[in-house]
Image 1: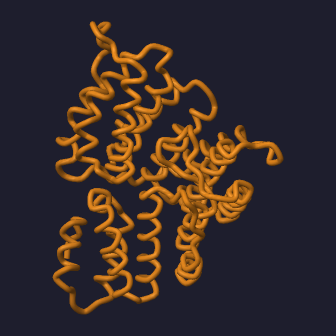
Image 2 (image 1 turned 90 degrees about the vertical axis):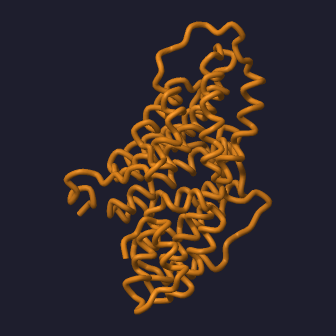
Image 3 (image 1 turned 135 degrees about the horizontal axis):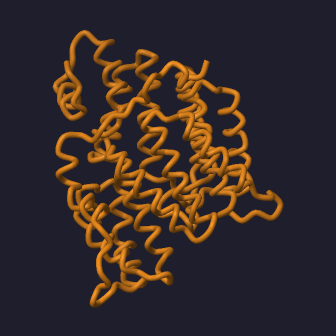
Length: 330
């Protein structure tokens, strides 16, 4: 039976306390009526330069700093004419990704659909579709996510003998989204098929790459291997997950910090399910130290810490502090 058949209403965890206040200027900029023509409209080159400075803030999970930069960046991007359309789409994609990370799903969906409508070609569109599918998965709208990612993966399927790395990446990333949605929806056969195809795309590329149409995402053998670990956990095979995590292929381009941090949570979860609580908490602490602004928004971190708490007789001060950070009741 599919998971969604058992769910009356998809689960949607909202933003943490204080997040709406921090992002209020961004929200105000995104929902304001169209402005009159600016006296000195921004230039594509100027907006691109600010975007280039902003992307590392997203990549490194510095969301508070990004929230301060985005209102002016969005305002300038909105003044661009058709020659700056691609830059405007990238700015919207950046905002949608950050809003999804911080669980502001209603606004994130509005922004990513705006980026999708403004895209110039299929490759540019695929980045927005990937974000939209990820957003739907985080909201628990698994049927919608699977349908969207599958449809676009089918439309983008390249001819392997002549496909570019960018084309293979776009296809592979959508296959990974489809696999993730299917696995969570208890459609294990579909998930396995999608993961197998994504692995073939990564093998054809032969290395980890950062495609031009993406702000931060990478694709390649390492990204696929990390998502394979997640798939094993969804299937309740923590021992398999740890075995897959042991030998991770390394390349000059590394997966994004989001993928690496999520992989770290998967490893911590696997340890916890096997009763190896000290190793699990050590991994959680490592992920928290690497992404302190990202960590409190992660439901898997909370679930793993709850498993540790349930399995131990006593808690250390560090565990209690992490529970406070994750807003977990003891």
